[in-house]
Image (cartoon, rainbow, N blue to C red; front, side, top):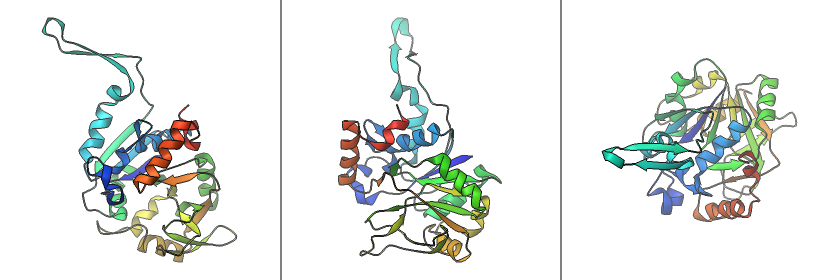
Length: 260
């Protein structure tokens, strides 16, 4: 099962850093938050990634192209006019990474629609490139397979301005609506599992996944909620980045266990 990561937005709310690099490439503990997200999926055996890039997408491609430079000791040998690179302590990941330029101004639904040809006719996972958690991915996938609906999202209880869910006792999502400043309810944390039928709900680059597609899925009874009661934190602002950095530096980051 492939993992799709939305990594193309401008990241305007953390512009202090996103002016220089794509938001998913902002570092926590010396590595991009994108890498931390991928490490969690990889821990559960999901190694095939499709990254929906856009803003400064070349930086994401270059980072993966130079992965050894970021993770290994390197000797550059210029003796006798040579230009050789020797990799020591060879370290890599069991990953296949497809980075797709899904456009600079494309909305979330449009980005997902653009990578349809890389997914094929199979279920896939999708999340945002700016949030870390300790969701049990294996249980999430098991739950998705158990109900047979098109979409499963991970819901967390947090007082933040995100998409708000109305969830029934049997975990059916009865309604999905955009944020209100007064909301403090179950919110959409990403970490979704989707059937290929999801592409029928997406139309064009201007399609915002969190608006009409999600609302239509809920109205059709095709959107389910997997409630996560553990850790989840997005990185929308410098303050949130500093919080994640602090947790990581102290060794108390809940998601770090996937990396040990």
